[in-house]
Image 1 (spheres, helix red, strand yellow):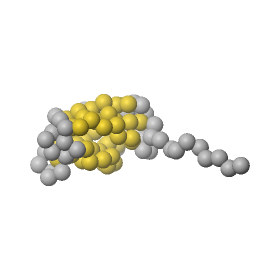
Image 2: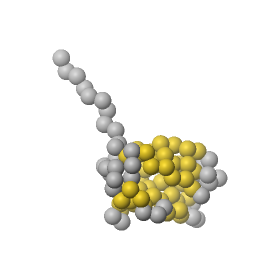
Image 3: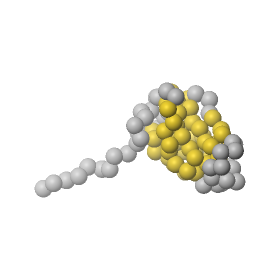
Length: 88
């Protein structure tokens, strides 16, 4: 018999709330490199898996309006199993 394991999941998750009236692109910024997570729809809350970044890693979170007119950046933080962040 061949069995498959559970699907791989990210160890860290960002619970992201977008209170903007427009969509935003959400990133984790790790050591100066932007890792795209997802385009977050307007006025929604989503859990965004962060692949390849372990809990405890110091990062910033960034959200940019899809038209580029505004960018939000978090203070430095350590990722946890579920990190919560909202804009604005």
